[in-house]
Length: 301
Ligand code: GLU
Image (cartoon, rainbow, N blue to C red):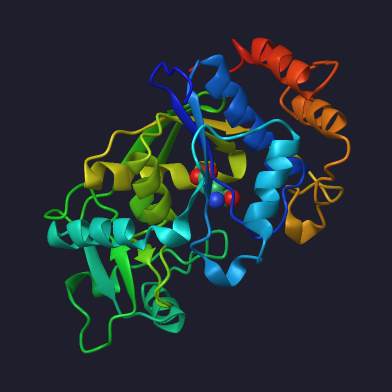
């Protein structure tokens, strides 16, 4: 294990396919930031959403990272083996009045929103109107939700979360009105990303989160959950997205190519450009060492 300054960073890919040019940006940025701070860098395979995971993708991602010289400072953890941690956190949230069972189907939610005169789909998600806050009213429990309010005893005020991102600056979200009470455990029994990521970042002592900008919108929910569980809030840096030919974020869905492992130096150089780094190196180790120097001062913590 390397000497550490207390900084702990991580890369947390979902194994829904191989790494592509966009996902390597977050991996490289999180590695560079950890090294530039003399810290540790962890890898966590986020395989809680089993139906979306591709067999073998987690191992392939680790091989792609290794080909680029990015090797974690501890054995990578797999979320699928950490259910007991998520269960314990959910119990604490339920016992403290923050979490409650919800019996609503999507149709129930749509009907309730229509009755209130506002359907507000947001990224295809509906803002939960709080129907089951006061009990299931005879419906069977499906999901478990977290109150998006300032306190469990005052469920009527809005929850305003302000936070600072090292690249995006000061941001704010009214979680109550933008998202509503959000899901911690899904109706199909699977753990929600929000719960798993907050529990794991805390359990692994993560002090600095560096990830793609597409995830920035989740941060206020995660900060709220950290507050509810009594965890410290890490420092956040959301990295620029790589856009595909259609101008949208490069993703497996819009045809991003899996990264080939045969030209890691070229792959690293291209990824560095996406982060604003013009770095040359004789080999992978040299390129990475030069990039760590170039990274210092970029979006300071
Ligand atoms: N597993 C998430 C993803 O691949 C990233 C989680 C995170 O970095 O917080 O999109």
